[in-house]
Amino acid sequence: MRDEPPTLCEREFVVQGIVENLRLDGRSRDDFRAVKLFLGSQTGTALCTLGNTKVYCTVSGEIGEPTRNRPSKGLVFVDVDMSPMANPSFQHGRLGSKGFELRRMLELVIRDSRCIDVESLCIRAGKEVWKVQVNIKVLDDDGCLLDCASVAAAAALHHYRRPMITVEPERTIIHSEREYAPVPLNIHHMPLCVMYGFIRDGEISITDPDSREELYLDGCLWLSVNKRKEICGLHQTSRLILTTAMIEACANRSFQRVSDLTDLITEICANDAATRSKNQVVEGFSLVFDELLHTNENHPNELIGPAIPKAVLNKFGPAEKDEASTSAQLDLNDATCNDDEMDDAKIQLQAEQIAASLKVQEENKEEGKAKKTPGSRKKENTEVMDLLDGLDDVGTADVVEKTHEQPPQTGDQDFSLLSAKRKKK
Image (cartoon, rainbow, N blue to C red; front, side, top):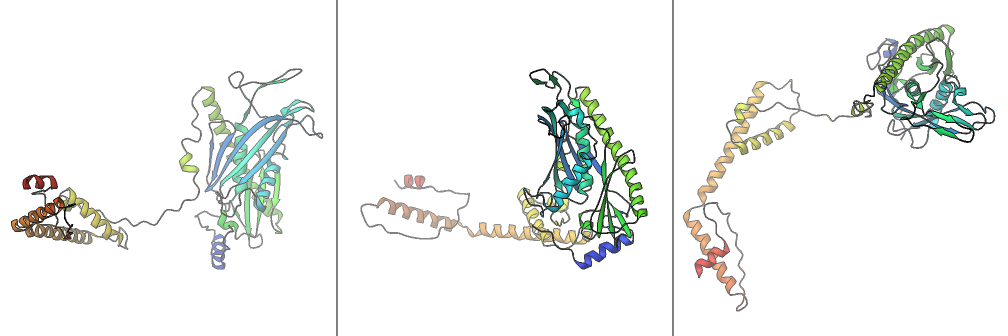
């Protein structure tokens, strides 16, 4: 499924709002969206949300053979899953241009920036090394996927613990968590990404654009920086010519942003480690699972009318209350105004209509009871006796079928075939 092409009117509306320093979600051009980060109960799992963008990251490790070019260095792999659940335009099992770009940038940030000490992952030079796998799963795409994915990956790498091993001449023993405490990765620094969008040929920039704003941008710039104010990577889309002053301004804003995010990751990982050291139960995603792992949800447009006054419902019995509530619901479903527009006069009018309808129903019931006189009951008894006579003659004479409409019986006198037959005998 492809994205709907943007209209010219919407494009002009969004661009003009950015020029006037007003965006669709109420932010200014230099404002970032809120970041929420959660660690799972299992080490090496993290969930990051950036506005409505949600990315889930898991880090795992296994022992394998190194490459011939680097026999004494471990391996780091990055995999990205662009599920159609995140965006209908994504295809299952296919990354597409956006997925390939995201994976390449994450490899640049995690592997090529040398933030992980891969030499410490070596077990036997040329024979056994640790292979660290970073799996990124996009849960919801609302813009700035790289920013959200980089935070989730950095938190998961800091949260990951590999098993303790013992190297013997002929074998390698992997110990469980009960025998020896797991070992964290040796991470030198923590590079994170910050995205900037440009309009009007690079004259105006915005930070942290959402998915709708990305459709109207003339180009984007990604900066990968760490807390030491080092630029670890830079990527630009389109053929915009950006000035040095514009790039420096973006870099200065990125330094402060990354510093705040790094402190957030460090604090959350420290709290999780303290909880585990006390042998306490780690809640993980259990407290926020239902709230965060839902994609964009569209609620139906509901019209809630005013309630029926209790004074009106107390005048009737339980059955009448149910009928009154049903009638009120039918009347309120046809309403086309809001709660604020309904005043006390209209509520009183509806209550009077309900009372009038219930009064008519009671009169109809009384008329039905009055129609059933003693003469009609005697007629019913005669018809039942005639029917029993016809049943006795079945098999010895021709059966005479009689069809008649039997009026509804009342609860005053019930007749059964057995009692009537006994009376006849």
